[in-house]
Image (cartoon, rainbow, N blue to C red; front, side, top):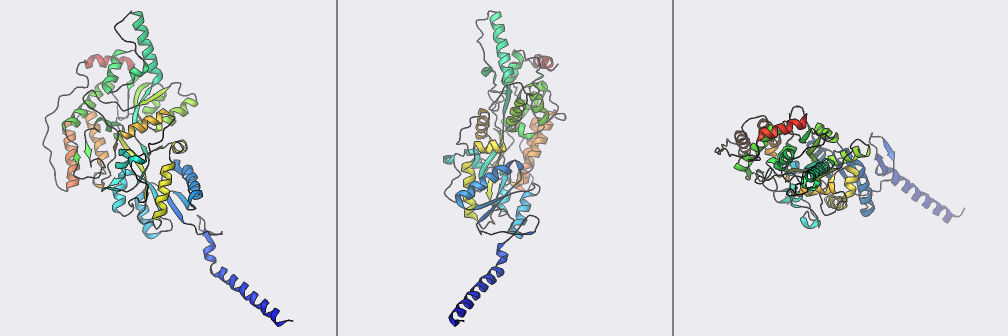
Length: 481
């Protein structure tokens, strides 16, 4: 046999053996682990991968959809991971320190936890060209919600807030009946009214409507809301108290006890004389069910009401039209402001893929909109898009006028304390005393030493000074029968 041919074959064999050896030695690079820990053969394309943690299963389909779209656009893989909300930040911290392969590069968290996350090194300031600003469609509430110590430490993703919910069918019936009586009495001085005229700008308006017009047969309550939950009560004093300033992170900007907040809470207590809501027997679910059953004209609701009412209407369980409006003021003097919670996309300070994470956050923010609501029931915190559904648009408007929940760690118990304060006042305890005590407790927590507030003179305030409450009580009693 030709020696040259033998040499060439030998050389070729050596090359093949070397390639096989190299493949065997590097085989571990081509083995992926599945969730159960079993090996499975697959080709590892060694693409950059981002892990996203979230706690709400309503986001699963949406995030998986966005992950594919982001991969198509950037060639960066995204692995959404649904995890328990219990000890959420603590588990992010543990994974970041001890198990970097499973730790999130990006995670979703409510804005009240941003300070805690940032101080633990779990939230980094956003970078890149995408500014969280009003120019890019974020209102000031959204910007403030993710601002900590002057830094943008998250990207507003979606929000929750409250609005006035009303039965539009009933308002049309009330207006029609009132106009019919006007014509029968040949009253030329009283103006014709429409359902739009019966959308109240204040709680005083609601009581005037209750005192002035007859209601449809099925109605049991004019105005009924969850008085046991601070989220639905906060608007009474939201315009007059400050906890942490605009961004909710300034420990030196605390103002809870003042004449306006005391006045507002005194009126809140006064409402119990008329609406008689037992907080031990009602909650948001029961309030919403009463509205679905056509028993209530006005209530305070969060954005989940849209899907509930639309689904009930489709199923034939809600034979009414409904509307949503700005939260009512108390009266002409006392203005209200609701609370909002913003869920933000946060980049883990321990992530080794911050540039890619910033690109993902920008992508998720820019592509959120009606698709986000359609797939998740969450309303985007980017308010630049217009919604065809006016009900969604109303919540966007209320969000822009809301107060972001504060993010200071030292005041994390504020909502429990406020809820207790409101409950005591609703049940008859002195509003002035309760607000003063609450303010002292919160300021003491922040100062680390006892703080005392100088007592304020008790303001004299009435919801509607010209109306006799005995007469209104009879009206409400007749309505409730």
